Each structure stands twice: as structure tokens, then as C-alpha cells.
Length: 172
Image 1 (spheres, one colour):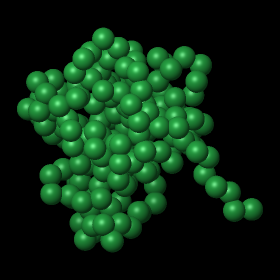
Image 2 (image 1 turned 90 degrees about the vertical axis):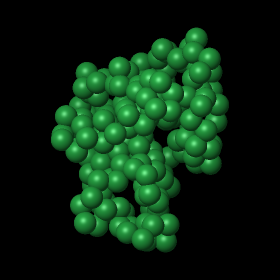
Image 3 (image 1 turned 180 degrees about the vertical axis):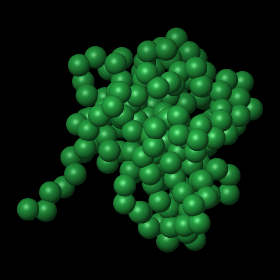
């Protein structure tokens, strides 16, 4: 994946790399995310994400690094079966380490581009109602409330959001 320069929003260059979910950097970042979510909501969310949910050619797991190679964050995209026949991807395991700037935006933009490339028409996600920072972030980036789906359908503590993906403009 090409290097993405976010020098305006962040003092460093953010490089995004697609890795397997069992890559040591992915494992470390997801462990840190699990700890953060456990402290925030009492549930790490780890039980709803595994290798089997990431089919080759339909999923991607990205790791964000700084210029010096330091790990900054991660995010994943996978097909969403609960959307029926519609080509919808689910955003999972979004995480930016404390003290970073522009990492979440870089990951989200890259994952949305990947979703378009993979033929998805929309991206859905779930976050906890208590995670106000995440809710503000996603809404600021064009995500709107949708009915709770799948495992979240009857969860009052869950908020599901979605965004329709417009095709990338072609400059022919």
C-alpha cells in the first residue's frame, strides 16, 4: 500500500500496510484496543472478530506506522453477511494509539478506498453508546445511524452506523 502523507494534520508521515490478523503487529495493536474497550465499556469486543471472518480477497487488515516504523493504529474491513445480498463491508478493530493525530482519518479513508476496490457499496460498523469519541469521529466522517444489525440488534448499549460509498471519480 502506498505511503500516505498527512503532514498537515500530523507532524509525521503515516504509512499503511496490509497485514494478516495474526501478524505480530496486528496482534499487539488489537490487544491494546481490547484493553481500551474493556476499560471503557466492560467488553473488549474481541469475541466478534477472528480470522474466519476475514476471507481472502474480500477483507483487509491495515496497520498504521509512523516515519520511524512506530505502530500508530489499525483497522479492518470484512464482508457483512447480515446485510443480505447487498455488498456491504463491516468496519472492525479501528484503533489509534493515544497521542497520535490523523491516524484514524488515514485508516478510515484507506479502508473506504479498499471497500470500493473490493466492490462494496456501503460500510457499516458498531460502537458502544458510551464511546462518544468514536461516535463523533464517525459522524464527522459521514456515517449516520442505521438500525442495529446482527449480534447488535437487541443491544441497547450498541450504536450502528453506516455510510454509502460513492464511486471514485474517474478522470478519463
